[in-house]
Amino acid sequence: NLSMKDKILQRFLSAKGEPISGQQLADELGISRTAIWKHLQTLQEEGYEFVTIKKKGYRLVEVPDRVDAAKISSFLNTKRFGHAIHYFEEIDSTQSVAQQLARQGAEDGTVIIAEEQTGGKGRMQRTWHSAKGKGIWMTIIVRPNIPPHQAPQLTLVAAVSVVLAMKSLYKNFIPVIKWPNDILINGKKCAGILTEMLAEMDRVEGLLIGIGINTNHELDDFPEDIQSIATSIAIEEKQKVDRAQLVAEILKNLEYYTDEYVAHGFKSIKKLWEEHSGTIGKRIKATTIREIIEGQAVGITDEGVLEILLDDGQVKKVYSADIEI
Ligand code: BT5
Image (cartoon, rainbow, N blue to C red; front, side, top):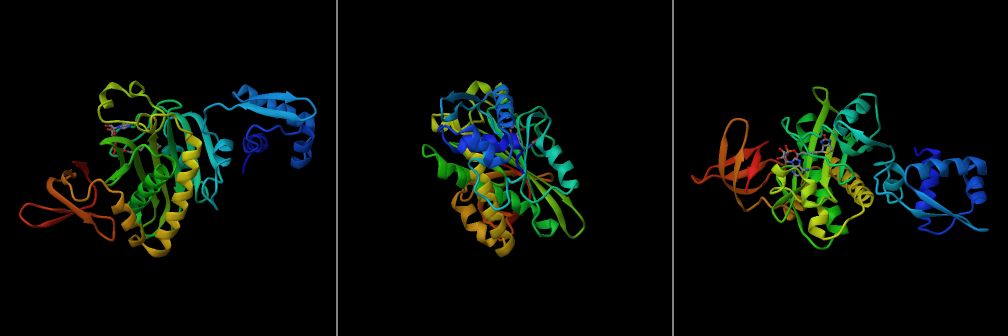
């Protein structure tokens, strides 16, 4: 699904700084050397920098910090997810674009990603702060064959996928899941997940899994009102990280665990979720639309529903809430 320009870029990215001959590239892609040169010009305008090495061809010497399709593809190792990527410099919300594309029949695993969101959405009409070039602001269209009431479980599948991707790439911190949709590091929010659904009565047509991850923020890249509750991977890892690499790792996990989940049910994910949970065992306060429930989080059910043990010994099931620990 990559454009010719992206294909060329991807070849250079995989060459890891080694020169590529213009003639060889032209032959490989079945276009003229002039066409190659024109695409390189366009890429230079986008911030990529090439130098010409005598008798050897071109060398890519500067890669801008972006999460475009070619850059993600150079790390990608999936069967379906991320094979179609819609990249935007700026967008209101990747969820809105995803909704349109899903209605138009976009395939399973289609990714919408942006450098900046001007109207990033949290749950229940809250806003999600999405600073330019600092984070991962993406939506994945997933089309699992499940009934609508199971859709919230995909949020938990996504949370497991994000946490495991972080754990495999970074070593200086331990991310934990806060039920249902937050990823915390040292008690502060590093990522949030928003799952929306297109459905008929008995069948999910498409899920829009929105994932927001604070990646390369310094503390003052956050608005003041969330500076005390938010953190980023760079702050916790103590160095900047490659956003495209993290995106590719998440897509690999999300494809794998969604397939596991569809084939074997939530039970197969539950154990992983509990292993990485920062909620279970803690005393919590859950605010639902109807009430406030205080007690000890004892576990999640095989359906992904949170169970809270009240002080009077009663166990309450919570399907959707905000949690304070
Ligand atoms: C979430 O909502 O945590 C879901 C966030 C989903 C964002 C992704 S980005 C890609 C896709 N496109 C979108 O438009 N959205 C999705 P919730 O649990 O309701 O948390 C929202 C609350 O988190 C806000 O009210 C703030 O208090 C706080 N918050 C906002 N921006 C934040 C940030 N960047 N980091 C940490 N906390 C933030």
